[in-house]
Length: 135
Image 1 (cartoon, rainbow, N blue to C red):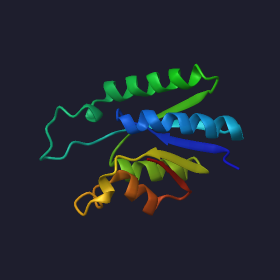
Image 2: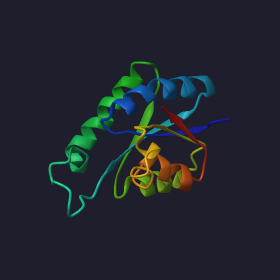
Image 3: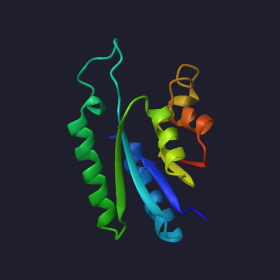
């Protein structure tokens, strides 16, 4: 059913919590797991110290996540891209013909201010495949 699962990751607690769900789905369906992390292009009004704008930090994050899944007997592929997270996640899902995207959710989309800023909300609206949101 889910031949290819895309798991976009960052350094959030929500990503760590979603990892258990990803492992269960991948093991249940024998899916191919692809980990994606996006190096964000810093906005002009954003401090340049944002950790997700560092390619080295993103590469280390991907390796750590790959290792965590490997300990559970799950082989994972990694992809690192640069750009807007929501658009990049959807583009990669389309390119690899993903059957499912699994994402953690910070709950930012529950407020009027956050609805337009929520990466998860944007992915849900733009995704070429189903999106499983782990609260």
